[in-house]
Image 1 (tube, rainbow, N blue to C red):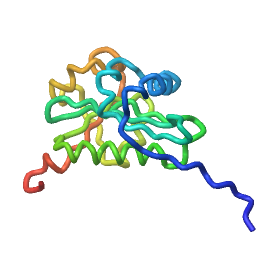
Image 2 (image 1 turned 90 degrees about the horizontal axis):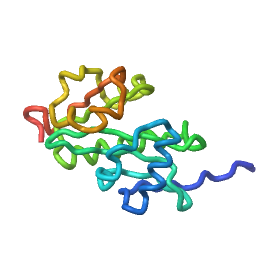
Image 3 (image 1 turned 90 degrees about the vertical axis):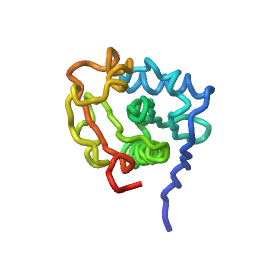
Length: 159
């Protein structure tokens, strides 16, 4: 006989306009920038449990490239694989949209993202449309680690 309590179910879904306040609150609590979130919200994915937003990840599309941004999980939901599910989902969405490469800036997770295939790069190597985003221009410090993931659409001979 087990005394364990079943973990609440989490659903991943595309963000909607009504999620903005909860998403921004989670990002602020996680010390992440909210600049540009409102405009990019339609390409964000949220994790919801019991009607509450418990995780988020964003995709800011810049031509054939995209910025993976705003990855956050409520503290009580960390270490359960939810962040991994969110990042895997947003990578799959980027692939489905034909994005060639994903870029990200991080000051805390440079050891986490290589597990998805991201590799460190330089700001100079980032395509201009991505460098022109508010996150690159002002929201993230110059000391942030820049990482890139080339997606299958960008690999010659692969569809």
